Amino acid sequence: MRKQLADRQQFGTITTDDRRREDRMPLALAIEVCGFDCSLRFFTERTETSNVSDSGCQFRLRMEVAKEAVVAIRVIHQNGGEEFSSKSALFRIVRVLPESQAILAGAQKLQPHSLWNLGVARLN
Image 1 (cartoon, rainbow, N blue to C red):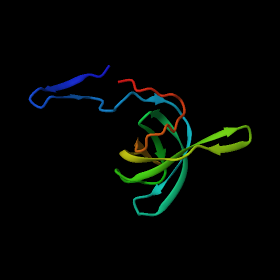
Image 2 (cartoon, helix red, strand yellow):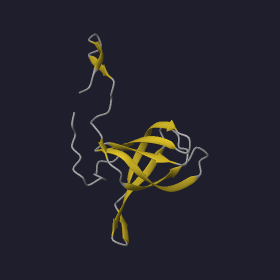
Image 3 (cartoon, rainbow, N blue to C red):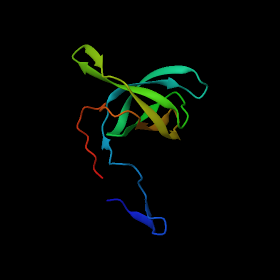
């Protein structure tokens, strides 16, 4: 349950400690992220999600990307020895947290189609 920190009735808004649209599901999915790093060099990096929701995901990258950057993400599926990928979707980087060997990125989906194919429901 989301804890209410302040109720600003004069503005008709409520501030909570978690401003996400819905809860996220902890899930490690193999993904490929393409975009431009902070030096404006194009990159493609394979990584995995740490959590997903209908409107976004979180993952680690070795490349440094800027907040507000737009990246393309596609899910990499494996079936035995074969590999195939889903259609990619555009995401906006909304959070960047530096770590020792990587960054932890939070991304918001910019397109309406489902990328995860898991039936992740809106829980708010």
